[in-house]
Length: 177
Image 1 (cartoon, rainbow, N blue to C red):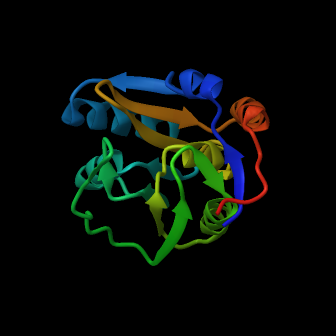
Image 2: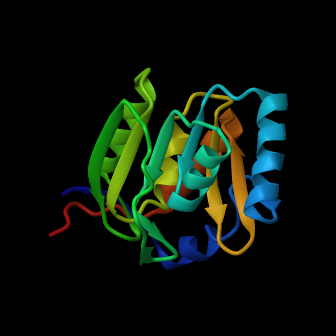
């Protein structure tokens, strides 16, 4: 397994802040606000990262083109939510890293016209960065902000540039054992 990026301690602190618009509130309230934003902005596509946010989007009849999950919530295993997708891809991505395998899976999924679910063996949080990097402009990348709500990242050239700087700052290592 080739690790492309490794999270540094400095970036761990920085990435606790939302990368986009934080919608605070209960699951019901955040999903209503998200639907209102999506209806107004009409995103090119929607990408969800995380089990809880994905489950809540689906429950509220919002169907992302790409769903990235790890069958864990707050580091605890959860029963997999049945997600109807045309493609399911399994990747390894250890906590605090981004693997080449995960990057390739996201790139392929975003090029596909099929709804795709990526199931991560490890941790999916940092894959938000890759989803933003490769998503079409005006897409929404949606993820949960623990104990606060949902974050909506509108993909723009400026946001892609910001994410590129974060990725540059991450340590690259050649190979994980």
